[in-house]
Length: 133
Image (cartoon, rainbow, N blue to C red; front, side, top):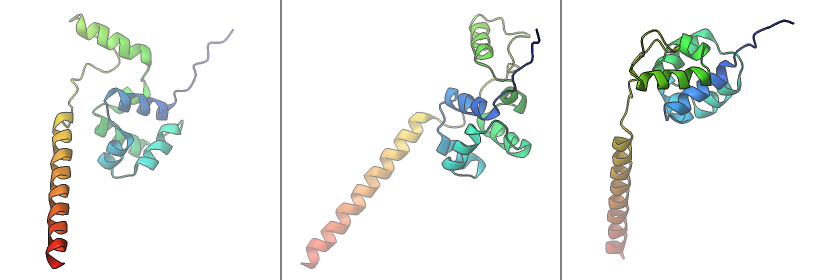
């Protein structure tokens, strides 16, 4: 009986890490200078170009090795050990602290500010139209 290891699906690993980071495909695409559609193609691919994988890893805030060796079990192990304060030598993430590159609340505030400005512009435009008549 042989115990052949199943090759890792790199695209699926990228997808899971991205989801765990709370990042949308569109945001990841912008971070590496591509489209959401291209990220979708990458995430459905079993293999990924090493140069592109390095860019993606940087955008996700993880190492290439973390993407290549990602497994659901290692995530649970990492967080269980992290919250037990016994992180030395455990997990496959090398215990790098995660650095969120943006605050989701700030993004919501920015969105509302843009919406308010758009409404102000619309009102101003409509007032100009009304004055012409």
